[in-house]
Structure formats: structure tokens, C-alpha cells
Image (cartoon, rainbow, N blue to C red; front, top):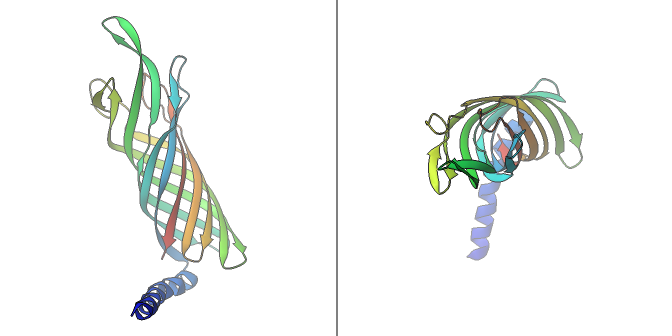
Length: 209
């Protein structure tokens, strides 16, 4: 019985993956789903403000179009959890207190890249790409002295919702599966207090259709 279930499961996996592989080979337009981990930070903070890396996550969908066997363009639509852990002086009753604040913004992000594909043995491909990204702050909280404050549009904290920057990415295709590593650098100062930019190292996996 166990052998029968194992054979049936293998057959179902083959039936599911085979059409995906055939479409991937024949079609220059490839859709994908992807997810992974962010290691984000605030860059360019002023003196007295110490920012450190905060783990986050991202997930989304994307499309890749082969202009030629080697050149491609790609775009995505992602939900990305960024932010930073920041130590700064906050005045309480006219006395400045060193406080650790954790920022947890959530962005809707659209990366648009152009890249080059290197063909490797065993049906593997190395992809190198770069391009701009656009992001919009959907929401998120900052935890200040135990109190949670809205990051976007609150009286105490008014971060800019719009972000724009440049991203770089390296990816390895193994059949229809992908492994990605990249970095995004934001050009927009997020607010007047921190005067910082978004920086984010990301790594993840995906599947192409």
C-alpha cells in the first residue's frame, strides 16, 4: 500500500510539473511566484541615531519576458515588510532619553529590471539584473517606549508613503525553480527626523510557470 501511494504521488508530481516545464521552454513570457526574507535597515541617519538591521519578509508575483535567449526584462508586484531597529534620543518631560524604536512599515513594491541570462549545465541558468523600483507604504507601526504608533499619516510620525530606488538581483534557475539574492537602495528620505533612506538585502525562492 505504501509503495502504491509513493508511486501515485510521484506520478501526480510528474503530471503537474511536466506541463509547467513544457510551457517554460516554449513560451518567452514566464510568470512566477516568489517569497523570501528581508534584512532591511535605515541608511544615512544623522549623528546620534544608530540604526541596525531588522529581519522581515516579502512575497509576490512577477513576470519575465525573454527579448532574446540571453536578454530579458522582468517586473513584479510584492508585499514587502521592511524597517529598522533604531536607537535615538527622545525628549520626555524636557529630558532626553535614549530609546530603542522598532519601525515595521509594510510596502507594496513594483520592481522593474532588465537583465542577462547565462546558460549553465544541467538545465540551470544564472540571471543578473538591475533596475528601478517603486514602493507605496500601505501601513505599519513603530514601537516607541512600549507604545505602538502608526508610521504613515499619524501626528507623531509622518513617514513619506512613496519610495523610489534602484535594485540589483542575482538569480539561479534550476528547472522551473529559482533562488534569488538582491539588494534595493532607496533614494527618498523617509522623514525629517531620521533623514534616512531604505536599504534592503533580500533572499528567497520562487517557481516559474
